[in-house]
Figure 1 (cartoon, helix red, strand yellow):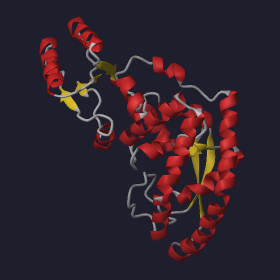
Figure 2 (cartoon, one colour):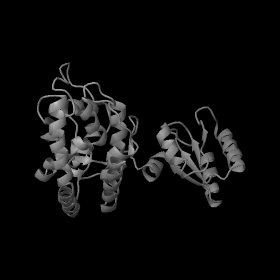
Figure 3 (cartoon, helix red, strand yellow):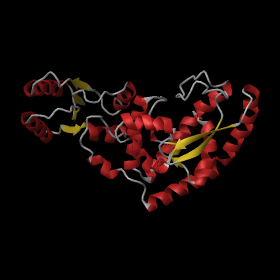
Length: 303
């Protein structure tokens, strides 16, 4: 594969995933090259390896000379693809940028149809039945460990933003000390010093989220969907991240595509990356995607 341009910066995690699909990944910085120089660079790389895909990773308007060259390459089996289509096809995320004026992809991002909603609720109730015993066990053992390590409430309740930007009371097994936010709201982090030993394990294994099956039962959440955020953070993200409110077209979930595809993170940059996965999930929802997310979540928790 040949990457032409620098519009989107791939993380090392993404490059590692792509290397499983493409034997060799080469990069050409388009900013400083003319159309003729770009074609010469592409020609060299095509001669030296078996690249069959050219990724147009630039926001610049390509000159007709270069477009003609790319279409001729297609005749010889070398495809070209835009960064928007590439990210959806190979990394399962929708590309969003601050300077983008093309919002056509938003037309396919909408709330679940009536039939899709019925399928979601069937999956929700099946998940509740299957996870009821593990949840009761987690609650029982956590009751002992939490009282031993950090006296206080067993459960942690917090207002989160759900479907249609309506707030609801989200419940979790408490994993942090009672005074965790004495200095104000802040994101959780890896090895967060505010957690106690058992609470850290709860967060790492996601077992603290199992109690949210109650929210699923009440219809405030689905088992799979975008993770719900606090109002204080959604307000900030909406100001800085285009299309952020689109994730509220559907109810949030205990697990989701962003949780299995993206490393643990917090803050605005991480929220933007997670949003790309959330938008892909909403746009391309299917029963097969739902089952895949559930299966990979189970593998993550077990391993």
